[in-house]
Image (cartoon, rainbow, N blue to C red):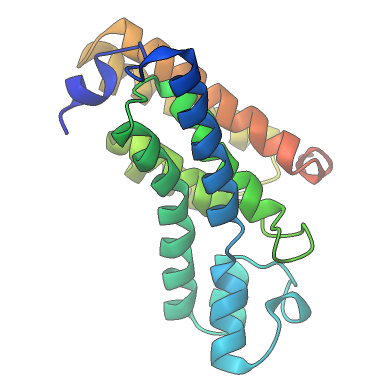
Amino acid sequence: MSLSGLYGFTYVRARGITGLMGVITAGIISGYILGSVSFAYLFTLFLTGVDIRDIGTKNPGAANVARSVGKKWGILVWLGDTVKGMIPMVFARNLGITNIIILTLIGLSAVAGHCYSMFLRFKGGRGAATTGGIVLFLMPVLFPLVIALWFTAQKTNPRSPKVLIACTAFYFICLYLAYGLRVNTAVFAQTAVSTVILIASAFLINPGLFREIK
């Protein structure tokens, strides 16, 4: 789909408020259920017979799988977690949802499922890869940049406010160059709001992040 097809319309094509709410509700519910599927738990259990929550950092995420089971398996888990963040948005878009903000909220239901999995007694990972899936779907041009900035922060000091602010500022500059100049300011505004929502949700879903930044 072209950029104009995904970003050129801010309205919702679903017919009627009932149809609209039905699509959004179905997207959120299916997103949460899909997000609750823990590839880190399943891969580790299948490969080693061990619960990923009992080894390494005890976090059911791709990084812990990479360290505790193997890098290639960590990459596969990362890919799975990324894709499951995209699927509910694909579902919603195909049913007529084109508003970027609404799609962001639907994608976040998968992040919530990953972090509070209904299959793991409402516990889970941190949702970084699944959030990345939202970025990949809505802002694909910037996805490589997000990956690069994430690794840069990890290599320097991911708990440093200065590093995080610098990476965030650089991201928004690139966001404007990619969408504000190449498409239009309305699209930049929507993607910027979407980004703010993603950042805010990261702290709301993972309150411990506040304590880690120092």
